Image 1 (cartoon, rainbow, N blue to C red):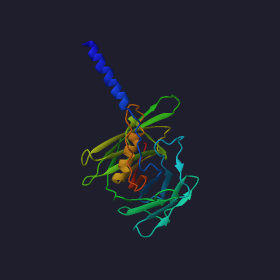
Image 2 (image 1 turned 120 degrees about the vertical axis):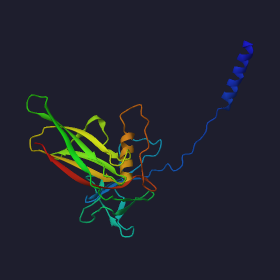
Image 3 (image 1 turned 135 degrees about the vertical axis):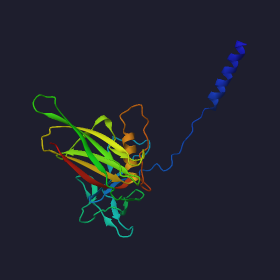
Image 4 (image 1 turned 30 degrees about the horizontal axis):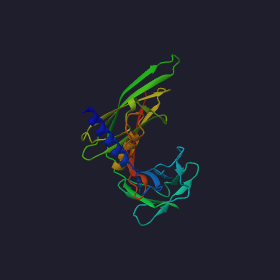
Length: 271
């Protein structure tokens, strides 16, 4: 009986080995694509970035391949277009507020072309700002050095504006220096947990003085802005056991993001 089992096992092994063969898999549409990044903010000058994607299995040293000779254009009616100017110092394409002044409720169209690439395009609508309650809940100060170098911690509460789906981003500054969120809290959030929800954010910073101004910048964005930053933050997670997730893109024929946002600043003085 044992000999029969051994013989069957050997025969199955031979059959499996004889069935092995190389399979060539053709990867379609693996050419480099234009990567366009443009966040269009109401009242902010327009700046966008254009680079080349890295084809699958291509070698790369981790450097972004900036496309410096692209033609990048923006329009508010999809008929009349304005050309952005390339700035080699910032590796970006831009227009000043004199030439292009985005406003709330307006839809904007953007397109880019470059030699050797398919032209890309996208559009976005800047939302109207829905008034939000932003409250400075708490200020904590400590002196860990004994030399007057105090650390300050602030707690901010944001109450969602009711009546519509909202997508937010939050930033905090002390004398124009940015605070850091505690506990890896995501700076992008939405009211998908419930209309009128309240959100708590805790920040810490060094070197403050009585009378310093804390500025909270609250962004209200379209869904694309939220989905891009949320997926990007998940993609670059420091957790080695987390599977990378695809980064959201809404660029036709290419990759990247075109999104709209508006913002308001809320200021508080340290007593």
